[in-house]
Image (tube, rainbow, N blue to C red; front, side, top):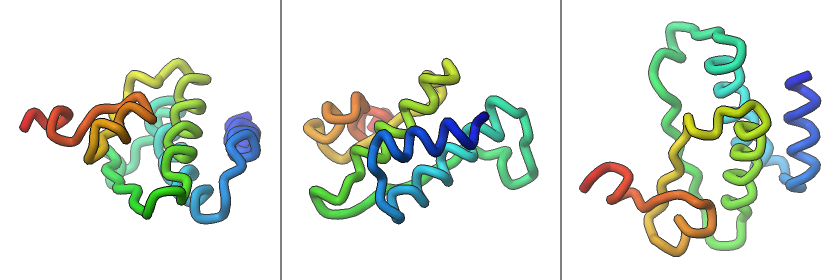
Length: 103
């Protein structure tokens, strides 16, 4: 079940409480929109979320956990991960904000 998938990925990436909150917001929105096609009025717009924190707080783990869920459902092409620096982008297989937004 989707709940089991989210729980398994949470355990696999050893997400702490705050990481789990971010992960569940993103993963639940993804599942509802693209897998269950349950779009509510508020969900018509894409989710835009900023995941911030100092180095070592586990932002990369959250991103990788989200990617894992999306890959399991064959939908990993539906998300873009933007970072302020090229080094951070390479860690998560993303792109810089400037390149992603065409600036």
